[in-house]
Length: 244
Ligand code: GLN
Figure 1 (cartoon, rainbow, N blue to C red):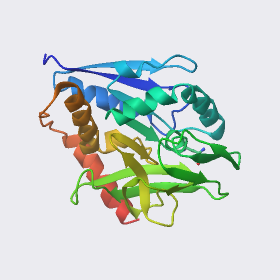
Figure 2 (figure 1 turned 60 degrees about the horizontal axis):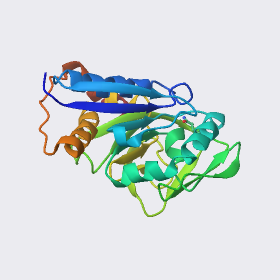
Figure 3 (figure 1 turned 30 degrees about the horizontal axis):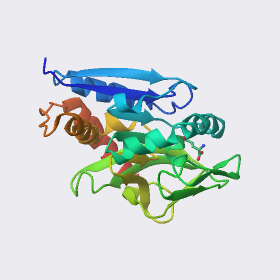
């Protein structure tokens, strides 16, 4: 057993957990174990205090407006610690509803509501939901590696001074207009991609594992995993959705 271990904080799994989001946690955990490293997952429940200093990866999934508001109220109390964690290069992955509430504003039942303001972006209400499969290209992984996922959201997100996670090749992404999908700031990833994201895109999972390991242990080379089934599933999904 290599003497490396990551602590993964799964925020509010009982509230935000749509379309297989928990699969992201399993993938991160297993990809560490398969490389003889350790993974400890802490499920953080509503109203408990998050010890960001003790976490290497934080994950926040997607959910309905009602659950988003409950989560916002919890996180607002620890906004400073969260910001400190992100500024210090902590890996933070937020999907859909979790992503929206990190911006300056987002809609609750159609009403503009204050967000945490960690990402410079706003999400506006819309009656028509954007639902379907998505394929994007992202600078995080380069030209040759596509990323695939599933989206289901009513909110339309418009980025300010923050970088997009990727460019939409098929699907809608942030707003269905400007071809952007998600946002990246340091090692914080905000994305609309459920599906779940990491099992469908193992290369992206490794990108963030590497970031977390390097922050904790310095330069790290990840052992290549065979990933035959994972890559076949990924390639099949990309091909199918690009041609739909
Ligand atoms: N309530 C948000 C929306 O519909 C987020 C939904 C989600 O997390 N899938 O825009």
